[in-house]
Amino acid sequence: MKKTQIALAALALVASSAAMADGVKIYGTADASVLSGANGTHLFGAGNNAGSILGLTGSEDLGGGLKAGFTLEGGVSFGTGEVVNGGPDGAGYSGIFNRQSNISLGNEAVTVTLGGQISTFVAASLTGLVGAGGNAAFVPALSRMAGSLGGSSTGAASGNAGTGPTAGAFFYSDLATINLNLNGVSLTAQTKVGSSNSGSGENVGKYSAYSATTSSMGVNLAVAGFSMSDAAGQGGSSYTIGGNTSVAGITIRGAYGRGNSTLVNGRGHSIGFDYSLTDALSVGYTHAKGSWDNGTEGKVGPAGSNGSQNSISAKYSLSPKTFAYATFSSFSDLGVNASAGGTGKTITILGVAHSF
Image 1 (spheres, rainbow, N blue to C red):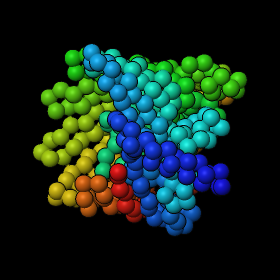
Image 2 (image 1 turned 180 degrees about the vertical axis):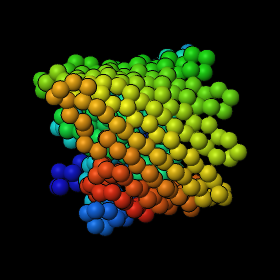
Image 3 (image 1 turned 120 degrees about the horizontal axis):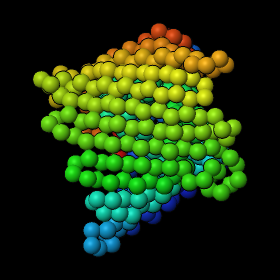
């Protein structure tokens, strides 16, 4: 704990100095909630609607339309002060910038980014999954989709799946990413450079992902996929397609995924809607389901992915930067929840989030 506190104090000092530098910004979200589930009632400060984070970002105009930029971002619990919400590579993510640590170079058409980043597969999945429930609905929904496609549903829920790449993880170290913007279509490809964390020698496997997103006539669409293998050589590949649109003031969203791996053949889907009752109050609903089959003898299904989820959410804006929220979720199985609450068939969350 002392090391964590010292690290956060150092981050605050760096942030204070960096804020005075031209083009550098401090940003973040503080999200804390009271959660009631199978393990009782407790405070959860890592973010059940918007992930609790603290970050630095900046850019420099190099002329001729070319820009250089960087991002340093860490997850933090506003309940305990601990470093949380990190990536899947074990000790490689024990530092304060456990979510993103990258540098980029590019223009409006092409950008290359090197370092720790969010998976473009997960980022594209936001298009068809995220709603008023935020993380409380999105994370377990992605767990059932990504988990049923051969990853770890528990890892998807926590954002940290132990050692090595997994289908359900959000963040990866040592990524090389290229993004192309062509006539309204954003194309992204990324791969983990090498099979160890920054040349540490520890084999953590391989990971590659791609995505394509576009918007046309009020419809937002995304297609994404990934392939991965762990240190033991087990892995697989999958794809997902999702989108959202607004009809008569109601935002409708949905996603479908399918894939296969060493452990399981699976499929998953999610559908939901969001509606603004007033300028300040919005409500939402999310249904997600994942299923799998052995495919061949010896395969096993990931815990928590072979079942369904229903989430009802409400979000009330207190200001442009602060909102309160409530989410109730029920599960047909003893699957993952969107918190540290462990397993259970129902979970209720009341929280508040502030961005800066």
